[in-house]
Length: 263
Image 1 (tube, rainbow, N blue to C red):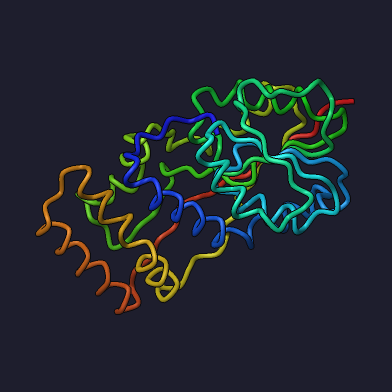
Image 2 (cartoon, rainbow, N blue to C red):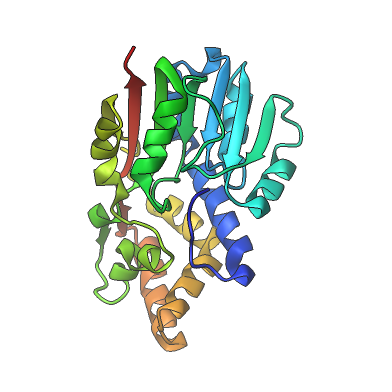
């Protein structure tokens, strides 16, 4: 993965767990996209920025073809090798997404998930994916959020900005990458379709379960931006109460992009 998240090594495992939870929670959004692009019948697939390998595992289980997965981090490739140890149709490589080690026009389908948000230069990454996909082949960015469109109510003017982009930006990511997908894909020369994958609003029970599973990540994020224990405790009490009262609403758009390379 070509990204430089400003995350201390001591917090990296928590970050990986967060990515794995996101992959699990968004699987219902990715499967329809895999159906749409014909992933099951593709012979050769490239997964760029595979990270922990959780999404790659879904691709490998879903597809009959060979899956080549690349990531710029040796550490993440080691993590992915454990996650994917039972998937015999996967090959893992350490590679920069900005300089893919493949010839032109090689792959039937190329996928990425939560990569462009963290990329140093997302346009170069999309250009590279376009270069190595076959004419008539597909490039899929299955999930790229846009925190600028995040909706949350009841509002908290002090805490909401942290999770509406401030924390992502501090880690080196682009919290507004979702709205840029069309530009990135069109400039790469792809015939482009943009959509939003997450159309369903979670129930308060689902939101609470997700928060409790990821609580350590949220608490550390608030501490990292300088909130006191008292402020965090007050926010958490109010947030959980609003969930128990059934009045909380959370939503932020998660965009996808499908690009077809011209023949």
